[in-house]
Every structure is written in structure tokens, then in C-alpha cells.
Image (cartoon, rainbow, N blue to C red):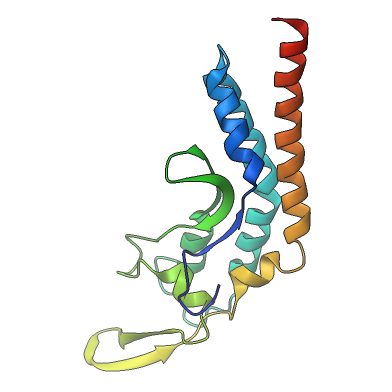
Length: 171
């Protein structure tokens, strides 16, 4: 996903998640069940988000500029779950850093091999090319995608079992 491709994220979706979301809407207390499913899915992805945060914090900082770019990026990495709307799924996403040094695309650019250009501080006539830690986000998940997908499927199966048990008990 490096190099400015599609949205900056690791996404795990499952065709059964749409059906599960519809079943939750049909339940009398579906809203509460949806909240529980979303919380369980976020919890399943939390280790991946922590790994990505750790990875960006390992990026070298030469000048110690303020505000701190690495910690600002790390704060914007979190699991996201949506059960309906334009897409249904669970993902870990690095959100934009809106107010950090006028650099909203910091997560994407620090991950990219191309890096980014910016003016030298205090001199808008001189521009430099800078690179971050190459593929820090991508490497945090590489080889672990199956673990996170399995955790998501387990959370979905648990909720489906709860709904099936209710239907079997008539409650």
C-alpha cells in the first residue's frame, strides 16, 4: 500500500459480515449487539494497531522538531469498524494528521519510498526532499494478516452463535 495507492489501511472484510450486520439489525436489541460486535472486532485488531504505532516510533528523528511528528502519527493509528453504509468491514487505519506542521498526509508520506518535499524551516526559497521509515505501516502487518483475519472471524462467529442460540431458545 506504499506509494500513495488506495486508502492507507490494512483491511479485513468478509462476505458474511454484511449478513451478520443485517441479522443484528433484525434483533430486538440489535443496536446493543452491533456495539458489542464492533467493540470485539476493534479489540481483535488492537495488536496490529499497536505494532504499527511501535513501528512509526522507531523512525529516526534527527532534529527533534516540535510538534513531534512520530508521536502525532502514532496517535492517529487505530482500528476502525463499520457495520453498514458504504462499506462493511474492520481495518486498521492511519488517519490524517491535520494540525501537525501543515502536513496532513504525514502517515502516507512517511511510509512511501518517494517521501515528501518541504521548505527548509525559516527559508521558503530552499526546498529539500525527505524520506521517512520505508513501509513502516506495511511491515507492521506483513506476515500477520492471517492472525488478524482469524481474530475477526472468531469475533463474527461468536456473535453469530449468540444470535443462533437466542433463536433456538425462543428469547
